[in-house]
Image (tube, rainbow, N blue to C red; front, top):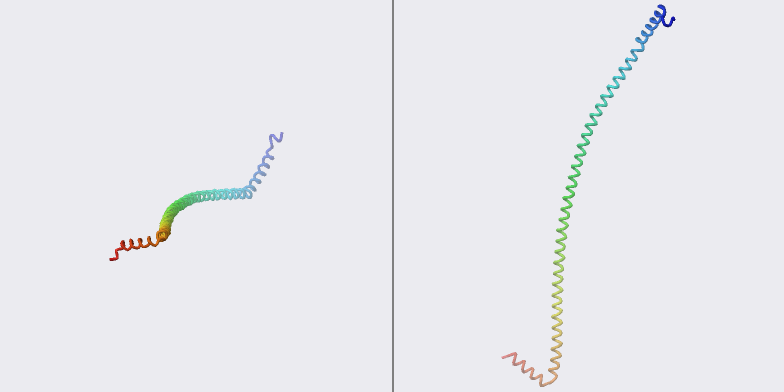
Length: 164
């Protein structure tokens, strides 16, 4: 029964031991524990502030990233528009150049055709002249083979020439 109803001496020694234990804890352990807790609390607070700063900086970086991305898209669009304009200009210049070359080729072809036509006409005239001379020579040879026909022909030409 002593454990259930302790005596006054036991209570006194238990309280004295607890008081000494509490004094030792309060003098040596509690300052270390409170300092550790305060240090830990400060460290956590610093980390929270750092996290908020990093979060704000990350938000700022995200905003800058969005601006840079928008600027890059705008530059890309400008470059594409400029390339499109240059492409259209090159197509137009190419078309004009092709048309000019086609006109030049057509003019050269027309000139060549005209020259060939003139050459053909000249060749045809020469052939007709040669043919006429050959025919005239054969006719004259046939006509002038007889002496009397020659004299009649000469008299006829003299009368036609009218030398008077």
